[in-house]
Length: 308
Length: 255
Image 1 (cartoon, each protein chain N blue to C red):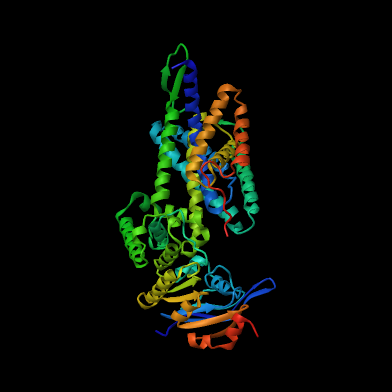
Image 2 (cartoon, rainbow over the protein chains, first blue to last red):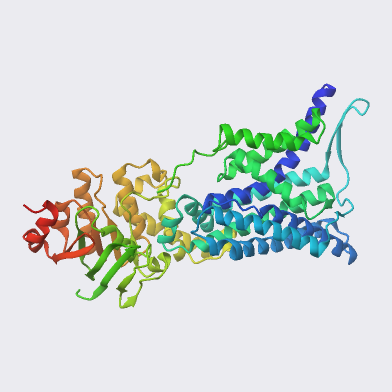
């Protein structure tokens, strides 16, 4: 392969890595939107909290002298998912449920408030500086000729692909096979009717927030380890990116969120391949504007039909 | 036979200054088909909305099996055995026929989150029971062959029947049907007629019906209530209603 195509391959790998984590976060946006038609702007903060919890748990375990990497990762993952889910559930219970049935704009403003609150809460609790963690997963494979261009695929990237793939498979099984998943789909089609069939839809909505937050925590762990740095403001930009991914794929559609995340990740990587990398945000949000202008329902979304 | 299932007294619903329903009384006994008729805009659907928990009535009491249900949440009312359909079909269009039937049994499948993921024996058994129950009702409404179709792809008459079957798997004691014959052809109406009668005679539930198709109403109702402009106008059996001058006036206008 030529040097140029190897270079593109490298960017594709990088793009898919980031894209798959965007997809994980985007699922949280899209599931909540699919059921209650609101954008949970505090979702990015849940991701950020997931990252922090990961860092704290890993630092704590290393401090305790536990060095086995798989054990550390599994514990960090479980704790991060649990704590983030608790936050997700609490945010819904405190800030959104009391506002159910009011004008659509009101929960949206409440969500923005919640986002600012969580950000500042973490600033106060953890400080506003970058927190760094030495890389835990080192090494990888290299392909190609070292004298021209070498494509590298790090173990960390492989871990990101594997964990994302497993999470999405489990989510798909949960949504398509389980009783709760069935109820989630029913809610997203007709919340009122689901209620009338004797299902407590508040529980299903709470579950949606919990599942979304758990996926965001997985993304928080993966991206935290990938970048090795976290600060209280990472949730804002990651949240916006994931939101873009969800809109790109068609908000309300889970496969759409995955597709949107991957496209966005690859687009960003390709942009930074040819332009200064600062332009990647310009391109991704430009993409958001274009989608909203020309295909507001997204790639896999259906045109919105006004519910009676 | 003559036990009182639903007892509605002085039901009133105001929206601001508009009185949509004014002092409506309804009684439904066990194993009875009771119809509510009235001209368009009479407030029939508002009555249904009050009974099913969609609206909280401004005044009046709604007793189901001697328990007050006015003001309860809609899912709580449905759990007490009162289930409804709507004027327009409200199926989960993108889900299959069998999934529609299983969602309706959600609360009977009392299992936790993890047993669903792990497919524990208890979960399997409950799912199997739910499937059999669903299959039984699909057979009853002649939709068993369509179990794996998307509900949105069924014909209109089939969708209507599926809605009734979906209500029936929740094991209601009182089924409220809001214009079930709307948009059906005469053949389908006749089938519906037979289905409703079999629900009363074989499955021993009561039905509260809103319907404009007078031949259907007169043919199957044990008791008929007429409301006009939100106010009760008359009640009685089919013969009494047909001969009531007030009812004729409300429908046809005064000379």
